[in-house]
Image (cartoon, rainbow, N blue to C red; front, side, top):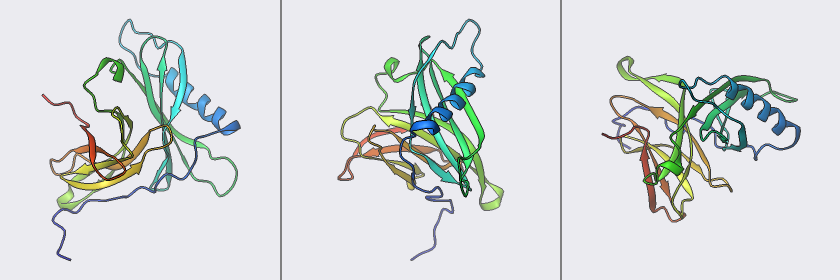
Length: 205
C-alpha cells in the first residue's frame, strides 16, 4: 500500500463495552451527574431548574479512561450535557475521576433544521507532524432523521471513528479534531451504508 498522506489517529478509542447503567451503579452515576450540573455557569437571570431523566450515551474508552456522556432536559427549558469518566478497575466499582457538565438553550426542539443533535468536549490531545496537535474530542448525539444505524467521525474526508447507534438511537465518538486546519464532521448512515444525515461541529456562517 502507498504511504499515507495524512498521519492522524484513527479508531483510537475502544468500541462501547457496557450496557446502559442499571441498579446501584446507575444511581451513583445519576448523583455524580446531578452534582456536576449544580456547578454549571449560567447567564445572568437564568435558572437551571429541576433536572429531568438522564439519557446515557454509549461508553468509549481511550487512554485508559472510560467516558460516559449524558444529557438531560431541565424544567427551565435548558439542556444539561456532559460526561463522567473513570479508570477501569481490576475489581469493584470504579472511582469517578472527572465529571463535567454545561447547560445550553440551543436544543433540537428549537432548531428544526438540525439533522443531528450533537454535544462535544475536548478530553485530550495528540501531537502529530511538525508539532501540530489534534484535539481529541468526545462527541455524543442522536440523529434527527429516520433510518440511521451508524455514526462516523470524518476529518478531511477520512473516517477516524465510528459507532453503531444504541437501542435508544444514541451514539458516542472519540476522534481527532482541529488538525492541520481540518475540522471534524459527523455523518450518519443507514444499515446499507447510505448517508442519511451530516453535521459539522462548527456553525457555518
